[in-house]
Length: 234
Ligand code: SAH
Ligand code: MG
Image (tube, rainbow, N blue to C red; front, side):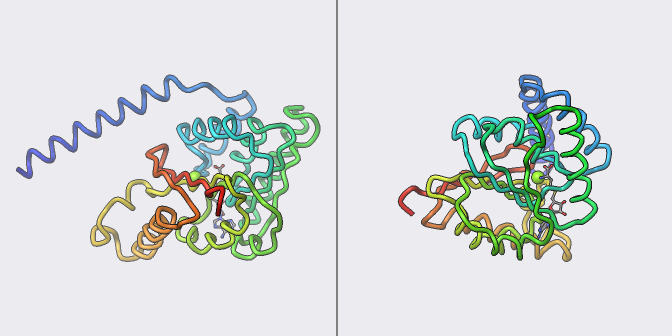
């Protein structure tokens, strides 16, 4: 039996790879500027949104036309420039990054976009530098699209503030929920030092799927993504 399972797992993986390759071959391409930024980020091992997640975000932007977007985890700015490219022109985009070097690089990339004339004028992205645990508390107003893409073990800590900021009908997209497949493993199969994050991500997913105010879909896209909508009567 064990041997059979091995064989099945193996062919499943090949099948999954074929599906992924096929779907990616059908994907539309980004603007040249985004393509260049994507190449740069990947060359530096910055964990930017994967292709399938990009398609998902583009779809959601077109479906909902959010006007006030908040991202947690800017890194070097690829995804915020991506959002800027495909969101409505009058959408406000705010992003948070705690790593000073990455925040500086993001600002540089925003300037590059301006100099290359990619957008009319500056990209107009508001970058808030600091820990989201502090910054989220200071934000006011309602966001109709929230992209959670920071330290995976902290999503749960951010959730109360995120729910305060998410408008009724607003979308919350949480990226990398599978952490390269690790979250799917039994906690005993996970290295001791990774167990905390394993437990926290599972708790977070439990909260998303059991909170009365949310309706949540868990998706396989990219490294796994949770798509939640805040119920309009909540
Ligand atoms: N959204 C980016 C990738 C983000 S990578 C893109 O797709 O292009 C995750 C980023 O979150 C890292 O740069 C990390 O420094 C930042 N981060 C992690 N924890 C954070 C926190 N508590 N507050 C703010 N930023 C955080
Ligand atoms: Mg991500």
